[in-house]
Length: 217
Length: 247
Image (cartoon, rainbow over all chains, first blue to last red):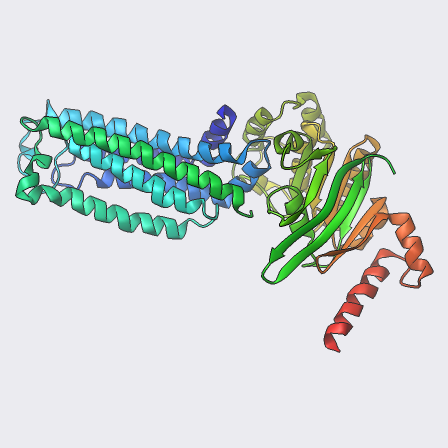
């Protein structure tokens, strides 16, 4: 598995994917739908899949003396690596907004989502969506990437729309709180999202392994 | 006939508009087998099936006496494959591709790699995109030979090559055979086989028409008045097919 991960990082991943991690900085933008930062991270990963397809990466991998299931697992692990790096950066900037920048005038009025544990929970759900809809869709053929990515765009925009506006419902106002009361609920939401991320990614990976064993390259 | 490095038995594959039917043949150790047939006859489907890139609906494939599905990883350590026009990571330096590739093969031999690199005049700082078609084939051969492949499977390696590069490649095949490496290569250019092949498998419309020693196949075709060389034999069968369709 180590050599497959090395293969992914040295041959399949574009420098652009690393560069798109910078989208995590969007967490600091005042008055901006900050969850879009997570979408741009996924867009960066997508660029690597596009380039890898043109480089016959899947055929090269299938000819190596490795299990096909390991080839799929390596792709998922590398995607999760980038998502979790982005998540760590987002968590860092969220912590900044909730502490040293909490009193900054730019963050006092915000019709959109505030950076808080619920925002991080939605970021994980967005990544889970990418792993399920895009990665799962890609391994139907191990070639076509357009349709799975369009499905991801549509579903992620629905998720971002919901995440950025749900707190306007009075009963869900706590989702918006940048600190203070009801934080227990916010942390619980983050823990639930982490669990969902792990479960959905694992299910998608197992399904992709089965599909990849069956498709003709 | 010496021991077979590859045995294919009753291979079948169904596509909506094409079927591979009961494909069976053997590649003897230390031989060059030409896999011929016109475009669309089933050469690539057969080669992909025996590499488990395409899933056959029936049949058995054995390499070095080992069944493919049960020993796929072990077998892939001992074979090399190159598709004619396929190149991998064409914008990456050869040095980087090799650095990754070598880590997958237990029998990788850096000395052999350097030797073939020099023999084929390959520059590690170039990318596959900067190589001619002939040099790309040589790169794939270098990778395969550096991990000690005992069998090379090549899909139309001579297509798109100029006559000099083609001749050079056929000389390489002959030299490899002399070192005990077996070569199975598909082609529709029959003159390639006249120069180096000692065995032949002829596929037509998804079925094997003939498989065995090239010498005895040519002799039998001559006796039956089908043709004196592979080109005449292929034309005889393929034209017959064409006239049947017109009738």
